[in-house]
Image (cartoon, rainbow, N blue to C red; front, side, top):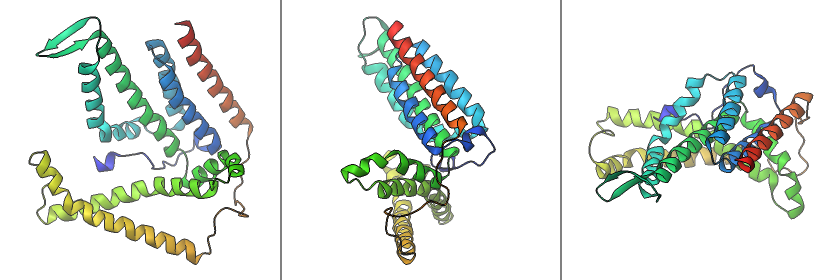
Length: 267
């Protein structure tokens, strides 16, 4: 399951999405996430599905590579389904198991919440899979630049978010190595009840935290040795400049949001 997490990884490919300005991809991702909460019926989610499928197709990232990232949230998805299915009151009772009832509204809410959660992961994965950490940092910093007037350390915030995303695949790889080493020494992470499995994770979590702190310290020392002093007065090797395709992409996003809002207002 650890190898199946794709969030934070970059997939190199020659696609129009990879060539887009990172600011466009950040704004598009935010707009898509907002649209998922605005949509409240099948037609709205159909529009979101068409948009997401088109974006995945344009990214040229294998679909199975994105879908395998959903395995990591299987239990969260299952818990969300169960809670919404049995704990949402409604007018029509479809199934009753002891004191638990599945209503028409509960079924409707459970299906929509599951779709929304899946689309949230896929939409976020498209952005990270088509954007390098450096481009993501530059895009975040550029988008948040108006906050500098409020004395917000924009560059530092963008740098921290970029480092956090970059550390996800590194820590996953480190976790896999430690797990294999512990299994070779007789550790069992599969069998037993929930409490036993939690106890078995202690030999995994302790060296993982030590490794994470060691990597963070090495990174801090490397930045200090290179006289890193934040974003004030720093220049970019590749400054962000909008191209014609970026404006076209913004236009598509506006049309998508307008369609989602129109569907909600009309229906």
